[in-house]
Amino acid sequence: MKSAEALLRFGTLLLGGTLILTHLPTHAQEDVTLTSGNRCGGSFTAPSGGPMTSPNYPSNYGNNEICEWLITVPAENRILLTFHSNVYLEKGNDFLVIYDGGSDKAAELWRMTGIAFNDYVLSTSNTVFLRFTSDGELTRKGFHFSYTSQTIDDTVQDECGDYISGQSSGKILSPNFPGEYDSDLRCTWTIVVSPGNLIRLEPEVFNIPLERDYLKVYDGQSEINGTIIGIYDGQVIPQRIISASNIMQLVFLTFRTNTDGRVGFKIRFEGRDIPQEILVTSNLIHLVLITDNSATEGGFKIHYKAFFLLRPPCFNPGVPENGLREGNSFDVGEFVSFRCDDGFTLKGRAILSCMSGYQMGWDGPLPTCKAECGGYRTTHAPGFIYSPNYPGQYGNNMNCTWTIEANLRQGEGIGMKIEKFSLEEGHDRLLIYDGDPISDSTLFGEYSGQEIPREVNSTSHIIHLVLITDESGSEDGFTINYEGFPLTDDSGCPDFRSIENGSIGKFEDGWILKFEDKRFPLGSTIPFRCDKWNYLRGPSEITCMPGGIWSSRPPTCEDATWCHGQRIVDEEEGEIKSPRVDLGRGLYNYPNNVDCRVDLDDTKYYRSVLAG
Image (cartoon, rainbow, N blue to C red; front, top):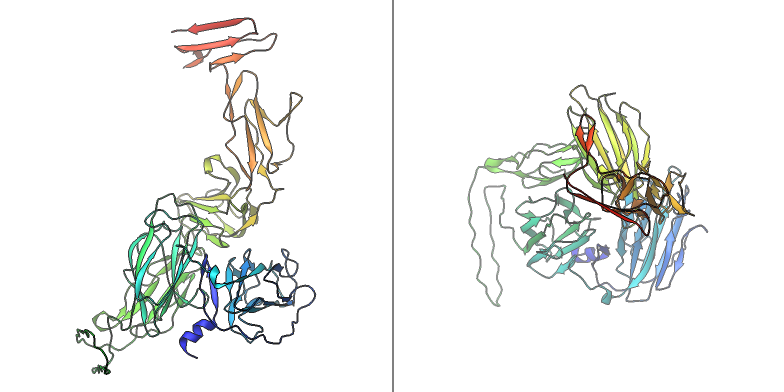
């Protein structure tokens, strides 16, 4: 099979709103007998359908499940599978496999195991076959998807991604460049040049917030079948990125509001028949020019230079602790790439090249993977947080803050599982705050030693973890696993402990009734009232919003003897105090230049102007 045909057989993915279409004849329908039980699977021929789920969804599926779906839409159409939430399967044992045809003999479009992000899969034909299998061990939540038929007319592209083919050069711009790009984007650009050519990227502008948004570059046709070249953020990027094949894919992901005004990137690409530099490993080279009897062109100019040849390959760079290495060839001209396990940050270059000649060896120092002191995380995918220098002991005199943010639009909260926890008893502590900012949030707890709840669920979409250590000893630290979960209507908003000089509750017949529950239901509106001789500063009521957050900060009750404009008195008997100022030593006096007005009833009016 030719390389171009091999590309087409792998089918088409729709990632971040970008469709990559291939044009193959409609697959002939193969005879297949579905082996599913009555709990799942089936054969479908409608233009669209769903939802389709694993057994028991959203609860865990069972052991030894076999589910098969056969979907067929009208000829000349494609099938778009939409996964409405992340896929959760037991990694390495339970699988969901999608075939680009009517049986398991067709090419695989996607093989899922473990955790896969909610996404889209587009076939190259009018038929797909899906098979889900589980073993007899652990089970997980499973999956939830639907399908629709797609015609070629549905594949209009926008500026968030593109499929570029047949161009020898061009430019890729982030959405809205040179303006600010939006949050919650997933944009995919696929570049295909003629077989035998390579692709070179040269960034002209690159400005992405560090450790927040990032650009992934793959050598190959997709994230599934390609090899990652690098993950880039900040303002530093290699001056030149070269593929090893004629296909390259760029994936741009944004998560948080672009408050820094970053413009994103402007990248120039070019496909070349011959690399700009050729390394010859012998003392002889032959160049052969062959022309036919048709037209001629301007030709070429080649510069050559001899050097001493050092043939031994580069040393084995090993695998960084808490990381991975891709690439097992250490010969001259070969590349190796590095990435870190979730929760660790790569320090150094992600890709190294084995150099020859006078510069024999890797073209940079070996990178390391470190657990950082604080950082920003999102629940776009489950992740881990480790104490600094994990698995070693953390340092002294540290003040580290980690912020985890869930998707507020989807009403998500944050669930944490504390897998390991050991801090110096009575000296070092971890504080967990529920809400944002920290100054207005609820302190969930302060923990030291080895005592901490094994599970923590937020009531809002943001959690802050603050680690504070002193100058004495240290311990092994902690490992925390986190992921997003839907905040149900029942979870509601947190209760207020109290309001000084006032009451919280709802009004009924002129009386204030306090809530006894620890949470307020979603949509409830809570009024506030101050005690006698106090006035309300702030809103008189607040409302519980989706995501378990209040519409605004609660008010406070201030001392009304500080004169604040007009005051109405409806009691038959009472006292009126003048404004006062603390002069120290327990002495008080009223201030200068104040204007206080008091209505005693509807007919009497008293006005006093106090002057110093």
